[in-house]
Image (cartoon, rainbow, N blue to C red; front, side, top):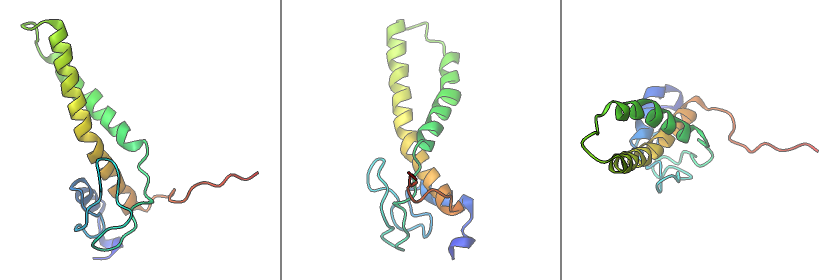
Length: 126
């Protein structure tokens, strides 16, 4: 399958599964938030793709707009306020830490498939 035949959905699905969006075989991330330079299976260059602020943005949107309203709907009157705040904070930190690398993988897959510009650094004229 060539690069042009890989759909956005396929590339995103492969990336979220921590696989190369091009071949689906090699790993995409080498550690928690570090992507590989090149796919070990197909050699596709992935190190130049910059997800930058997109992954934290998506994480904030999901945690702040999906999970936080759920917390407001919970009735925690049976426990002290400080225990409820500490436990909900712990849950939200854990959810955020779980979503962040997957959001980065998702955006890397989308940026790879769309061939979005911005792979080279901008040179200042002066």
